[in-house]
Length: 129
Image (tube, rainbow, N blue to C red; front, top):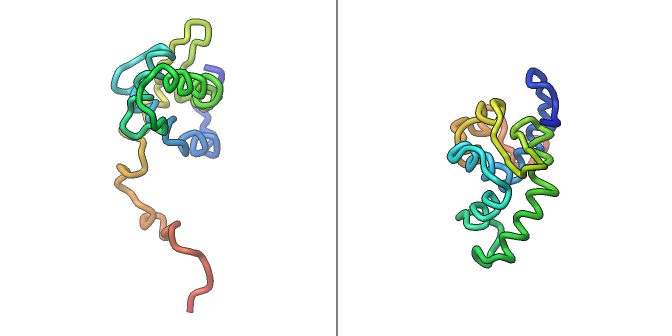
């Protein structure tokens, strides 16, 4: 892991990292299946029902997903301490920090909604009255 020490959590980095659905899908997949190779991850994510790749699971789509994994998503997840990524062997494993997140890190499955925080972010802020 190239990220921060396990005891320190930079919440801005964590929230920014979890803000992308592809990274949440990746964490869910690693939680379910354990350590995986980058090529195997790309194939699984290209076929994910919520995939942003629209044209199926062909070689071109898997290559696009793999490229984004290697250059964007895995560095961010590794930097946040959520995965261990062995670049030389191209193996990715979820860390204890990653496992400590709620199952299915998708906001749609969180039980505490915005009302818990006292405001709904979908409502425009302004003066009342």
